[in-house]
Image 1 (cartoon, rainbow, N blue to C red):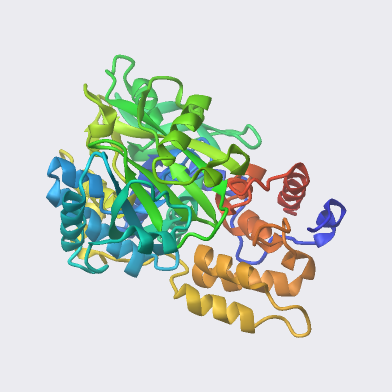
Image 2: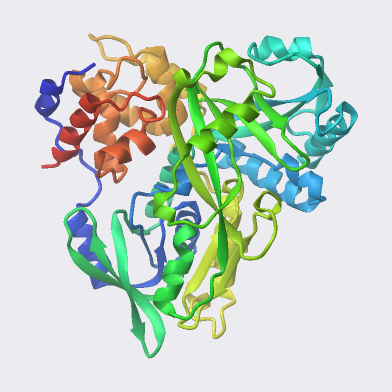
Length: 536
């Protein structure tokens, strides 16, 4: 690992073509009048900013924390049709989800999405029989036009060859289907880049302290820079509240008497070291509606999720001892004990699902996207699924076009006249990128390690060549941040100069995988902070 003493000597001034400074961005935000100000840098806000900028609107996007800093980087990391929705008869929803899943994984971001085979174990006495699950996965694959093969049933012995830790006691059969997987934080960051490429101006770590009003209408926001405390404001013709779990907090800034519009459900996850290789994921039915996942992800094992109503401060959401016990207990239905040792846990995280207000069990609630207009004309968008993030962006834009008086319609290109599957930056075949990284190393100099090449290819696509160039120009940046992780120091410099990283957590939790691997040591954190501070 690069020693702490060597980090300040890297001499890595910001690269040409790097992002404007925060002061420059604040000045740009302050002096213009925007068509649309998006408050909230989760995937809903990011996707809307991307689509709005594509449509020709002048767009600003701000977030109190980091982009995807809350729930959007605390998901189950899946792009999926939603097998459990078949249970409620939501056939059209599943088909729509499959369309979006395939579009993202094959045409929009094939460099950031990975196909994943899922096994549904059918145990004696379980909530579903083999015939029912077999028919379910067949119907599920039919709704994706059999684009990922035909859902079917295999023997326990065959399944155990791919998942050695599968519990086979009382296992009758295993149903098979396919979906896709991603690193949600990386997908969100690439979508921010796409929005900026389309003309949006963005700033993270900028909290709204109040709204601007003109004759009773919301016309912007007052903000405070969380990095240096500078106060500034943004003026806009229309403000979109996309703050997720905080959506009602902002609605009350618009109208102190606004009634609650949402409820929250907490989803907790655990990340564990794997004791053996996994070549498929497990999706184990817990009851008629719930499934617990065991997903091979980032060389680790991701377990989850819980689904319970949450009424506390969204900023305080965390994984409790009860959450940990529940996740491990439910995983034990289908996973052997040695893989579920608490000593293997490297990280845990929890996010909040935003659901429409109303009664009922959160596990049965629909993942609907709700767009409402407040008394001051501010639009609020909440809910939805990661898989349909592009569809949500288009939905909000169609709402903007149809507003009474059509305040923005004349200035924006209709969604049906824009490319429907515009790719995210870095689009490339990750296998080809990894191959190039391996054979195009510096001469003289050591070749890039295969795990690092693969990691860069599947997290940056063709943009990985920019990181490799930094490493080639400065050998210190080619060294691993931690010996047990594939990341190199060039990624930290790149995150600082091109990906809006301001804090160590921005880098370690969302732009790399060091935190989820349990490798964000004090030494690593200090080194990252020193490199982030070297901006001049």
